[in-house]
Image (cartoon, rainbow, N blue to C red; front, side, top):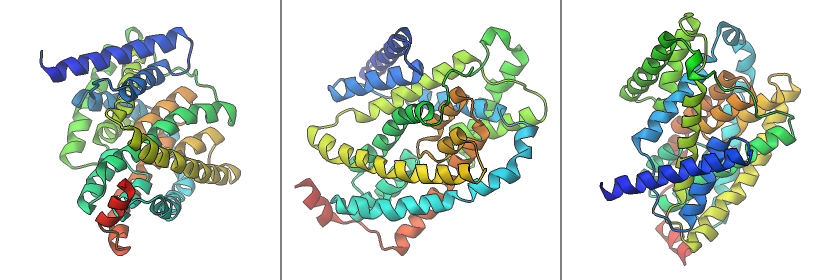
Amino acid sequence: MSALTTKRAGTLALALAGALVFQALGMPLPFLFGPMVLCLIAALAGAPLRGMGVVSTAARTILGVAVGASITPDVLARLPQMAGSVALVPLYVLAIGAIGYPFFRRMGFDPPTAWYGAMPGGLADMLAFGQEAGADLRALSLIQATRVLVIVIAAPLILTGLYGATLDQPIGAPMIELPLGELALMAAAALIGWKLAERVGLFGASILGPMILTAALSLGDFIHSRPPTEAILVAQLFIGLSVGVQYVGVTLRELRVFVLSGLAFVGVLAVLATIFTEIVTLTGLAEPAEGFLAFAPGGQAEMAVLALVAGADAGFVILHHMVRIIVVILGAPIAARLAGVRSGGADRTRRRE
């Protein structure tokens, strides 16, 4: 057994232990928070953890199928209503960038790191853009990972405490209760949708590809249920694990500088998310819980999980996050060039001193 395989086996065992412990303690979302918390603690303690690579990516296809299965003719009938809140997403991204960039510059980060650290996009995309622009990739990865981590932890508390949502909605039926034909169609939609989306270069291919293909099957009356409970729990486990291992190798200086900067910025994001949630709620464009999940700047997979367990309209939530990611991916590099955001080695040197 190679060293990499050994590390991954140990990481998976730790994640499973976390899920079981949190479940035994009656904690909410045990298969998401258990792996995330134990892997985070172990990572900060210096344990040699490793992510699951393509296995974690494959697990996300389950959520894509779950969201796609939620897209029914009734959801399509709501598209005109959704258009009003979706139109606010570009303004939301613009507000985040307008506040976030000067925030990170004042914290001492060089221009590319400040720019892409502020952008509420996917981690992989922001790292790719940041690398091309000359950003500090370690700082950027920790800032973005902290955003996702804190939002995943805080969102359930906000949903239950502020919006009165419960997190005990059924996420799916047991596998034994689902027709074999539908299970086969879901599995095919997950794999084929993922690989086709990758081939055409679609961002978030592991979620959006299966979602689109499954939505077509749902609208065509070929499937009538979400993936089984067991599959969605597996997806939660790998997502929690992936968030936790982002902190492997973090030094005290990085914890003090990069992570705390990311943590402070989450406070700014919380205020902006609350403002836009109130706008769509007061104008009748969305229910409170759905509005919050739609504008909470977390990852697509994490917000999909929360939408499912909160009984929110998962299609509505993911549509907003999809538009947010599109706006960031298309707009952030162009806006960076127009604003003259370039590598600032001197700024980075001052920061490290």
